[in-house]
Length: 432
Image (cartoon, rainbow, N blue to C red; front, side, top):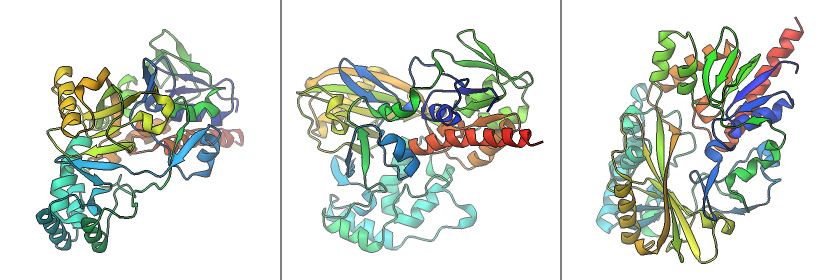
């Protein structure tokens, strides 16, 4: 193509867009000082921490062709859950063995009594009741929804669920209440992770030829003159723009847009995360890679062990663990760092994972965007905004550019799709 393309954001989507464009004229502008975005990582001394769990389980052959060029290990996932300091296999709904017998009976009886959902007024809450009954919904899912999504389930739609939430049969629920020896019903049967370098190492095969300008945040977008201004002083013209920055940020920097567009963007919601990373002397008393935390008095919703993903993330004689605490603008986290750390220290001791005295390093940092919150008007507002920008030769892609629950492989293909749309448009113009 002989058309100039500017890409906003050097996460997995922006890098993929540049890779599939195959032009040395295409430039990516990235606000941070390194590529990877949410797929990136950081180091505490010699210990590598990803920004969250990050494991690849893609079945897409094109993405596998890229990722498999990187030396990696493969394994079957066995995540765990903890509730009231009892450990459960995952998913919890068909692995209730650790419950007291009285609670198992309540769970099974309410599962049998579950009602069909009213499809005319469907939301995540009544969907949960229709799939799992009262006990499992109220003791596990509603609590976790508040912690992970920072929203009440009745305010969320179900467009994001797809195969992410397992719906067991009655036989599976009963079986999982009677024994721990249950089959793995997690949606991914194989996980993959780079041998070294953290999760972003999977991007190495497509990043080497990218032209990336770092420390350059987009601060102004002029649709009429097709220019973008950046925090480093650059001002560039574009023929086409691929935006992987959050839709809410894109609208905030765009000049002369309608009040309706602004209003719709203001109604888009996402979570932010506080990542608490610990380096611990010795071994942790946990054998798997990650676990989910249902208790509302424990701040994190989820935790993972970097050294279990790859021994090259740690040093011999040490272990690491990272906790994820979620919040949003409507429900900000009103805790000091000291309170956050003490809450986690209390948890790891009560759960018998580690002693607070074994922690030799700790780090607290934030991520501005982690998950799209799917309230009931999200899709309508998102599509209106994306359609507006496409009419102005701006193609939104990636988890927050596209404002969707995309995994990393889907985010990569989203970048490819944006470039394909541009190529198609250029081809149509050339044929006129």
